[in-house]
Length: 221
Image (cartoon, helix red, strand yellow):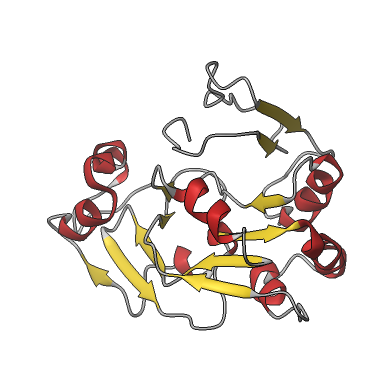
């Protein structure tokens, strides 16, 4: 996040429902137009809970600007992500990046999911006019928020899918267990033993993930 090339008024809303607060080091001191808003919903998350919908609802009253872009803390974003999404929202009410590229770090496997109608939440941006629908979706359920969001009819407004390759969903990292399909490395995944694909996708940032990888035939505890 420190490397994002977007310039202009910017608000980071960080929703942190862990019992121990997480440090947020990416607020650039040189960017005077940046606002950092930290939201600490209670009760704090406990093992087995899915608090995504609750946390989004806690964030919404704090929104200051018209464009809302989702960033998930366990995924990789290129430095052009915010700038590209913001530009897309200049002429659309909802923008998403497709396809979804997932990389299961421990097993060195990748998967590409072609989608022609929607994007994952971690690759989605919306304008303020969509917020009432997002709120309704989160009140109703914590499941498949991204799928249901992209099903919302937007009338004369527009939805746009772009193929810019600015996001990689990084799976299997320490922390809370994920519930999405990308967290299960079984099935139609492809092994990337030499990390060729990962280097193509995230370049020199590979070094940050290597400590979480294991060799085929080994187990982790």
